[in-house]
Image (cartoon, rainbow, N blue to C red; front, side, top):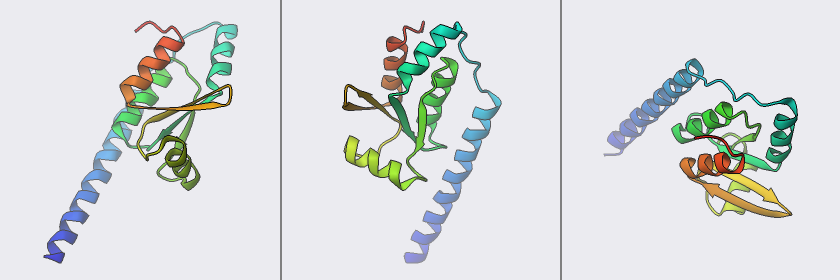
Length: 133
């Protein structure tokens, strides 16, 4: 019974790894182009996004969806890999209460808000920066 569990675990680990690599390859091959803004408008957006960070796992399909939206809308938000970086993982747990990605961290006036769910994050960013959907 233990051997069956071990084989099943190993098989699923390999499948997850392979699917993650396929997701990353497809993302790299189909990267969207960024939005065009005037230099001043982009500087304003960049200033606004300095108070934000995205906690993510590199091969998570929902995180890829958020990263593609960031690229498509030319939003320079810090990406924090909560899988490989223990500090970021602990921040995600202590500030958000759970280790779930993607998570948008927004700090305004000393107040930190954590937002989960890729669609909600993208909608928030599009509405905040008045991006046509």
